Amino acid sequence: MTKFVVVLALGAGLSSPAMIPAAARDGGNFNGAWSVELVTETGMVCDSRYTYAVSVQEGAVRLASASGSASVSGRVGPDGTVGLNVSNGTASGAISGRLQSQSGGGTWKVSSLCSGRWTARRQTTRTAQAD
Image (cartoon, rainbow, N blue to C red; front, side, top):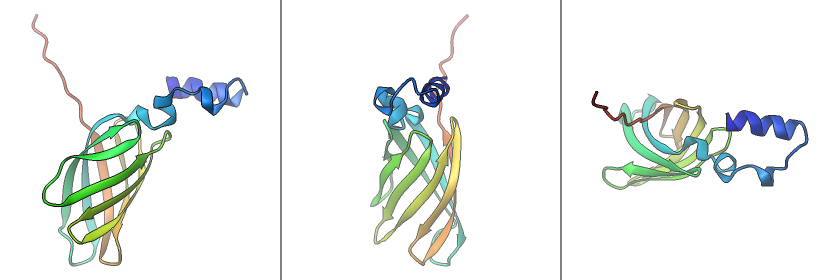
């Protein structure tokens, strides 16, 4: 709802980007835990799939759990645009795409070695309530 109101206000000339709440301006609408799966579509030297748990906080992305020397740096924009650099050992590459409220996807590439697609799902924590 905040995004809708912000778009209407900007469209009507009633606000400036500086007046938009920081969370909406900095990708904060995507805050939380995400499960990301990278699937290799081309290339022989990469595993068929990789799964990572990442955390988004005010647009900044970091690994929540990693094996070995994996690292992620980059951001999610206010519109959900994803731009990340990833590395695992000596290999490094780029991830691009878009997140929506509960899921997302795009492409990834590790130099000329391999490439593929990725999907993401927002992780939710549900609390049981006693009657």
